[in-house]
Amino acid sequence: MIPTGRLLKLLRPFRWGIALAVLLSFATVGSSVGLMATSAYLISRAALATNAVELSLALAGVRLFALSRAALRYSERTVSHTITFCVLTRLRVWFYEAIEPLAPARLMAYRSGDLLARVVNDIETLENFYARVVVPPIAAGLVAALTGGILGYFSWATAAAFLAFYLLAGVALPLLTRRLGREAGAAAIAARAELQAAVADDIFGMADLVAYGQDEPRVARTLRQSAALQAEQTRLAHLRGLANGLTALLTGGVSLAVLIIAIPLVTDGRLEGVYLALLPLAAAAAFEAVGPLALAYEHLGAGNAAATRLYELIDTQPEVADPAQPASRPAEFGLEARGLTFRYAPGEPPTLENLSFTLPPGERALVVGPSGAGKTTLVNLLLRFWDVAPGQLLLGGRDIRDYAADDVRSWMAVVDQHTYLFNSTIRNNLALAQAAATDEELLVACDEAQLGDFIRHLPDGLDTMVGENGLRLSGGERQRLAIARALLKDAPIVILDEATAHLDALTEAAVWQGMERLMVGRTVMVIGHAIKAEFSSPERKSALVERDFESPHPVFRNFQQIIAVDRQG
Image (tube, rainbow, N blue to C red; front, side, top):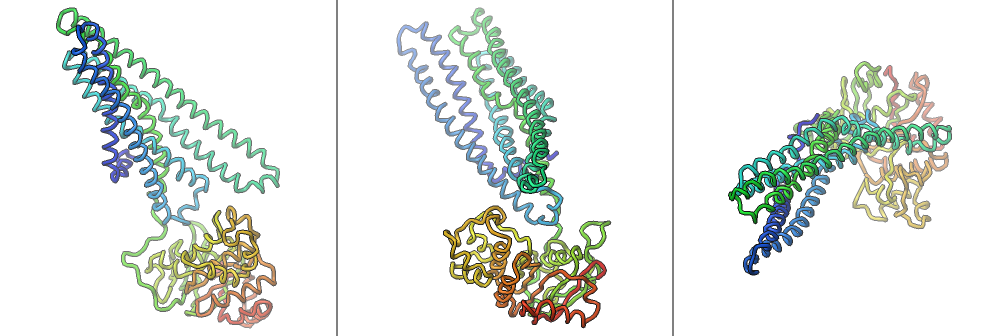
């Protein structure tokens, strides 16, 4: 479990707002205590008063406490909710900034639904930690001191009885609910995460589930997971009911106990009878501050469980670390590999083994090899998603690890066959490459990617929504949009990983012609499929290029070399 102090550190920027919320909460309950006390005194004094002047001070007190209680309650709720929302906003930004360096290497082991549950549900769970665990105990302590002081002024025995019941309701009962609810709270967090992850998987794969007739078994599984979550939530609801009932019982008990102690004081003449009703009502009113404490430990347990899941990711070390003093932008952008060997996990067979090549700046290379040979892995290493070991990967004559990862990525424009498109407009998806681009510049890039005419004929043009991962577009349209985005980035290194895989032959040829501008003067790496046997000799390589790419892709005549990739180097 995560130490509570670690969560409290996140509140440091909001400490003054939280202090104000505590004071307002204390003042609100204090006004309730004052209202009940003065009201009881007023009624008792009215029965004995001979003129209205004797009641003027009590009447003023009742009016003051009644009005201030409403104003303070409104202010306390406003401040508390504002601080809570600010904390949640900071938590989401903090969590995203913490996991962003982990992508994609460290996040591959997590399902997207589980990550979504952590970002949304687990952070929202911490709302209860800050709103119901941090503020209420401090406010309750201040209320205990105030009410104990008032009762102690009249009788230390009534103050002692009040504090005994207050400790039972504010300490013993929360400890009991924590012990009873610890397992259910953690189980509810886990069940909710499992359900959300499973539902996200089912939604993404719904078409395949229906096509293969597996939709009903998945629905049955989801219902079972939902029932498991509901069972844990029911356990927590029963616990809350028990806590609320016991709190009400102790509230009535403290009034009775204080009354029993105060009656002999009145009969013995040690306490004026007009104060008899004041003492038990003031003690009962103070228990307004104790009510939230009964569930404080439950929320503490749920908060710790949620925080544990968050810190599981946050404490993960990124796969790639930037150097203490990153190298500046190189003068040229050649690429070179020396004995490059890479495996994704210890004990696994190498994905790349002893790969060496030199791609001078401004030249073009075709990277070929069978599926699974490591072509995409080479792209991942160039983008510094993983670090190279053993071997070396050089950019501009320097080890690529000498540069900051974000700098390396800014120098590369990558188009692969699975480019992700956000559920936004065409304009916003293109703006990822160049936020300040004008509509004219966007359309020029789209024209070169053979997408301009299609966009101009859409009713909303560049403002057309593309849907989740571009599902409102065809595969070819999505690919051309990704190519247009690469054209806009205008990076010195261009990597095309099966960039035209979803295009028909004529469109593919036109797209390659359009990308000629993108390639001029840049270091270009184009990745495709081929069988290594085709590259057994330089003559076979030349023949392959001439046969496969001279027509309909004359742009490939300008390739200076072919880099053959497989697990044997």
